[in-house]
Length: 79
Length: 285
Image (cartoon, chains in turn purple, blue):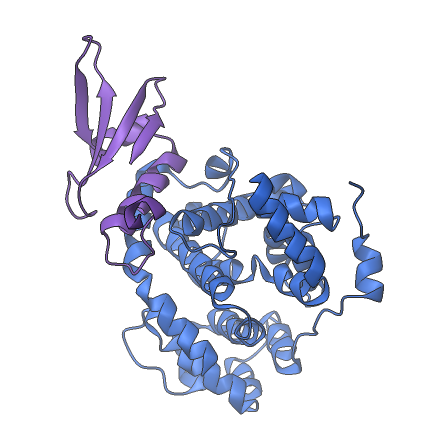
């Protein structure tokens, strides 16, 4: 999905790989304290690192890309 | 650029805001009378068959999620209570005003009502609304001022659209630059004319900027509307094609929306979204 600023000051990414009913459908990727390595965890486990607006952004993008709510896919998904 | 219009002058000389239909005004008066018998509201509503029919169609849509079919106004009043029926009647009336407008605007307003309803259901007593039915009406009404700006100031609103798009600024900011006030302000004037409770007036006025609420006690409901608006826009359900949306980070706390509740709220919102189509079809029958 793209880059995201986490509440603890780190910069990371959110990767959308599946629908909301898949626990690992949205994965947060944050640089580890060990240089060159990353930590990954599902959205539910990483909510504390995100602002409310970022949580909504991720869930809405996930629903638009993979959901069945009849929402228009995001522009980047339609090309 | 100097603002082009003074809202008071505009309302005196150019814009005619509609009056609330007599039946609805009478029902609002009765509901707010503590001595009002339940059946008197049902009688007033039944005397207006088109409104009564539309109210019954609305209450039986999946949007309201009732377990049983409601077939008479008396049944609706007994089952749902006066305040909910008042909100339904009001919704049916606003639908008549909105149903002729463009689809994206109507869909945004109804979806915002759904988001408000879901926030109220999950957030419960912490939320700044008294019921999910009232929350839904808030969402339905929040952008109503745009209808009148588009009707009476079409050239200015076309310029607002162009300015918002080319400069990447929020719609309401472009309105303030070009017209002199935003749709929240004229929507609030309509709500005042209809003698709606202050929480509706101030919610409409402050939904893009809580600081514009004239009474600080209604900032939380304005913030809640701002969040509902943001959620719909992030889902691609904008009132205007390609609109730029901004939400003050303080709105979440002001609206009492807890981060821990957000996934549940959003799941319920997504689950209920298909009911928006049914409601829109009902409004256009």
